[in-house]
Length: 76
Figure: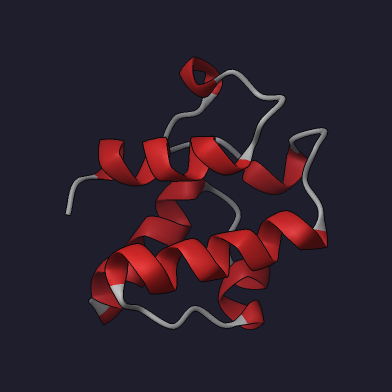
């Protein structure tokens, strides 16, 4: 599992944000299009692509894409 692949998967969920603007240090909840629907989409994507069950608390505790990636990697 590579961080760049994870960022690419996250980028697909943010339709109005340029994928090139997303990095491991991006504070995803500060993006203009952040919503509870995208949070659910992240949970579903992680479950489908990485077979890891993220919880709402995991997203609440995460600030950056790297934080999310670390949780997924620890539980993969």
